[in-house]
Structure formats: C-alpha cells, structure tokens
Image (cartoon, rainbow, N blue to C red; front, side, top):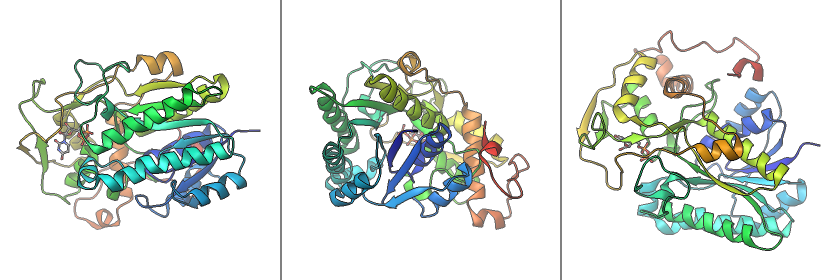
Length: 363
Ligand code: UDP
C-alpha cells in the first residue's frame, strides 16, 4: 500500500513540482491549497502531466476544522508543508499577516496532525536562515540569524519542529533549506506564476525577454565577485522536488530526522543568468545597474555535502536547463506572447500534438 502524503501549498511553484515527483515515486498525494498565490487550473495541469486524477482541496492550511475533515477523510502518513508566504518585501510591509500565514498556520497544522496521530513532516525552510554568511560555501552548522520577518518566520518554524523531534516519542522531521529555486517542469505546463514573484530574478528575466519590461535592473555592480554582480546558488525546481521525495523516504523508511541544504553548491552571477537567458530565448535582455538592494549579500551558495551523504541527493540540472525550462513555461503559458511580434525561437520544443503522458516529460 503506497503511503498517502498531505501536500499543503501543492498548487504553488515548488509544491506543484513536488506533487509530480511524489506521484512518479508512487505516493498517493492529497493537495491542500487556498489558491491565494496559485492558478486554479494547476490541479488540471498536474493531471495532464501525471496521467492520474488529482485530489486537491481548496483549504487554508490554518483552518483547523477543515484540517480535521481532511485528516478524517484520508489516512495520511506524512505531511509535506509548503503553504506559506515568501515575499521579503511583503513580510516587511505587513509582518502580522505574514506571521499568521507562516507561524500560526504551521502551529494549527501541527496541532491537527497531533489530533490525528500524524507525526512526520517535511518542512520548507530557506537559506535565508543563514542571513549574511560568514564564509562560503554555507554548511548547515553555520550561525543562524534573520534579517526580515520572513527569515524570522522560517527560523521559528524550524525551532517549533525541533522541539517536536526532541520530545519522547518525538516527530520525524525533514527540514529543507532551499537556496534559489528556478526553472520549471519540462512540459511547460507548470512553473512559477507571475503573481507569486516577490522580485525574484528569473521571472524578471523572462519578462524583459518577452518585452513586458524595457530592461532588467541589476542591483549592485561592485560586489567583490568576479564580474561585480551578486552570486547565488540556483537550483532547478525539479531537482528541489526530488529532494523532498528523498527527505520523505528518509523519514518513512529510517525514521531519521534531518536538516539539510538543498542547493547545487555552485554560484552564478546575475550577469551569468542574463547571458544564459539571452541564449536560450534568442532575445536581447537590456539591463541597467542600480545601487545594491537593501539586505542583499554579495554571494551565497550551499555546501551540499550533507544532503548528498544523508539523502543521496544531488542537484543534476544546470543553469542552461533552468533558463530553458523557465522560458518554455513563460512562453507557453502566456497567450499575449503567442500573439506578439517577437515569437518564441525554434529552440523552444513543440508540445506533443495530443495526449500527454508522463513518459513524454521524463528527463
Ligand atoms: N537581482 C537583481 N535584479 C532584480 C532581482 C534580483 O539584480 O530585479 C539580483 C539580486 O540582487 C541577487 C540575485 O539577483 O543578487 C538573486 O535575487 P533573488 O531576489 O532572485 O533571490 P535572493 O537570493 O535575493 O533571495
């Protein structure tokens, strides 16, 4: 009997890709999403990709009564918890709303899990918990700090879960600290929805390539990096999704809690991304330099060795794959682009004429 997984935020960017990875790994998955930051047709698209009916409920992960109904309906073995807000500017503008979504909801979900005897969770954390790193690459034992309410919410979430792990008969928890997720599923059917973007680089590159924006603003040109622009560890969202499956398997098979970085362990500058995106899209990406963005660090990339040792996880896809799949998603999902003068280049693969099956999309 395959395990049944409750996937909160399963219609969102990372959640939807993780749904595909879980189904391909043989799990039964129940999605909960309040669709505050995801398109309503995502479940339908997930059905197209996987070739299976999708169970998705329009439920807020902080709605205690609705959670009880879900746990009473399905025999849930573990929860993968994505449902949260992630925009740093939004967290600064309205911390209260942010804490409700990220902290109060997590505690409500944890209480509902306890009422129904579920004590295994994979938790979405972020490299933001390292603040400005003292050295690179960043290992998991680096000092933890926060620089905005979003970072604080992730740090507190980790700590609440650590308390649960330490209790007698404690929980089994996989805390996954993501670096910079980018790219999209190879089908071009799911990706990062524009409404979810809190100013992240790759969706902005796409908008400039599609001529929706006249130029990219690059924040900072005089960091102590080889080309002067900021360096980040970009990881393909499908690799990240696979990391969740491996984390879950560690919990289910070995009952081994863990806190690991999910990154590629390589840094790329903003200009590296501009050049690669220009190549995959066949479009010019004009840019202008501006002052550094408040709170940005010069460089951040993971020490990925603990995820490799503990979970046998390695991020395989490269920057080209991330840019190409992002462009495919951005152009296929955008009716305005289909009509525009600057059509997609021949590098964009055609969708199969009819009948999508998972085999069509395997890497
Ligand atoms: N960045 C940029 N222009 C933008 C958005 C981002 O130059 O419009 C840079 C940012 O300064 C950082 C990198 O791109 O060096 C990644 O930023 P993003 O917001 O995507 O992720 P972060 O690492 O800040 O969470």
